[in-house]
Length: 344
Image 1 (cartoon, one colour):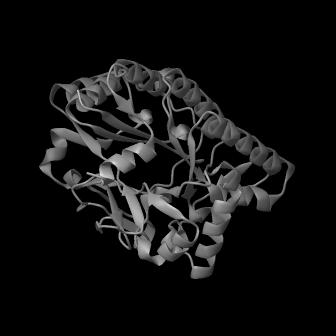
Image 2 (cartoon, helix red, strand yellow):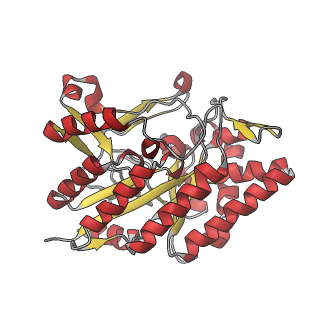
Image 3 (tube, helix red, strand yellow):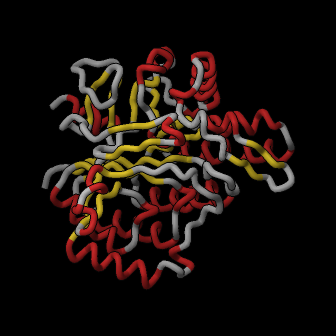
């Protein structure tokens, strides 16, 4: 059996809508449960940290915000000490988020600057510079910095590429293959419906245009199709269990409302199959088995998960998934995965 490359990536963030949720339920608790599973299976991942949320905690300068920042940075030290990678995740709408001290809640409903491309050049420079500086002690000095765009909105990449190059943010993990999205009032969007054949490749100004010896590296996100008997079983299973405690998410906030769709969502095919990314929050025993079946036939899986959206059943299913694939030859180290695929 050939080697299987598994990328485990996590967007470490609060909810992005009217209710941010608490750091205990959206970040600390679900991430701690995740770390225990990763340690058990000796699996390594990349944690993309929502840096502008940390900036706003500093700016508010209240006792509660100071404590939250201290708690988050403490968990980042634990993540780093466990051998995982820390990367940059930028949601610019945090610059406009409104904080209410009485409820300790952030309201992120102002979405006119949801994507990095929505910022002025000066604000782009500030946001990117701050993001690198606040994470400096967690970054590996001998490696390029990894990045995932907030909401995956990394186009037009050319509008901030020069700042990324200056700060050595050279590896992007934002392209969701065959997905697209138009955000609030069409102020931001992405279209990844025509990516290169390769999962990992070099590029310069557009992350879906492969350029040999380009300045940046794209590590794209693949998906799988849930169809046939598995789709029927999953649908029945979900309806029977969706209201049980184990199926309720741990996080306690509300989402941004942005819609991301697969190219097949607009066709009749959506009635007979479901195209979805690999994600812990989507997992249950049936989905876990589907992931195992996919991996037996394929050699690349890129998980994109959010601790804020984890459920108890999802975490248990992820644990069982890792247990079921333990006899396969698995590579989790993103640097080795990138190097081997770029050399082919």
